[in-house]
Length: 162
Image 1 (spheres, rainbow, N blue to C red):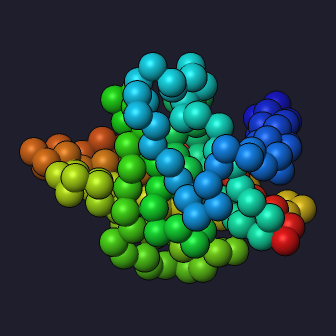
Image 2 (cartoon, helix red, strand yellow):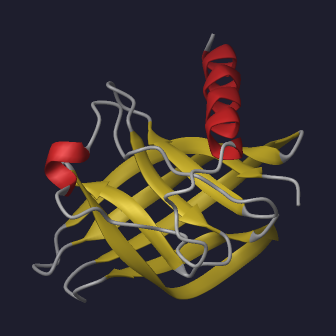
């Protein structure tokens, strides 16, 4: 049942990603909106799009309700995370581990304001047409006060053919 849900969700994401909006600037890969709290859908982060030749990493939290909590485009050096009900921009600071597709199994991020960090650890799963499942993962957010929040995640990396 979970596999069917993941395949259905990945298919919907790939279909949504394949449509390119004329409003999206060509040079921007990750955008944070002016009023993120009012624009966050109940499913989590707003829909993200990829252009031809781009690859993205889409992650959902494992706890109910399952929400779209993390997105990054492989060549951007930036990411979006859903934190406190709002999309927050992250900057890549370090990568480690194994390479799968255009991503690493361990990536470290810093918030745009530099006050908190995120460590993402992933275990890649089976290959899909145009991508790969993420079997499991952990988003560990460390606040300015040193407190850590661990969020188990799963998802997919997907590429739009160039």
